[in-house]
Length: 145
View (cartoon, rainbow, N blue to C red):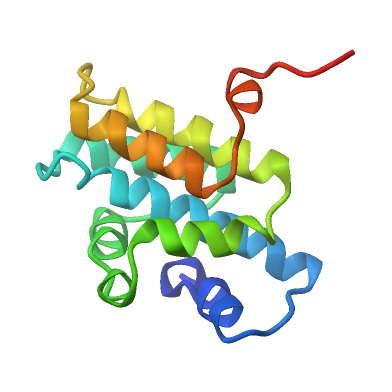
């Protein structure tokens, strides 16, 4: 599955411009990276969280992922070079506001997968929202008429 290879993220960090279709792929890759990494945010990857990531990714991207895809993305070697927040911050400049909000909504769903929210998950959510350059009003859906 091409999204699992994170080619859009790699291309972006290679300094190349993205076409509209590539921007869509990048948005899907950002969601995969974010949701997969969320499963490890509290240092305890639970099967229920991985299953929720697969379900949410299918809902938002229309693509099926395996548990192995999610676990590999959660532990990608990309994170050895830089933290997730750095990747998200750079990617956010190429994503629409709608795509960034969609990612944060999907993250919220995954965080609630095991019916408990840890301090680590809250901190992860806040770091992701900040890296995606989302404002408080955008997070709650508030906009001027």
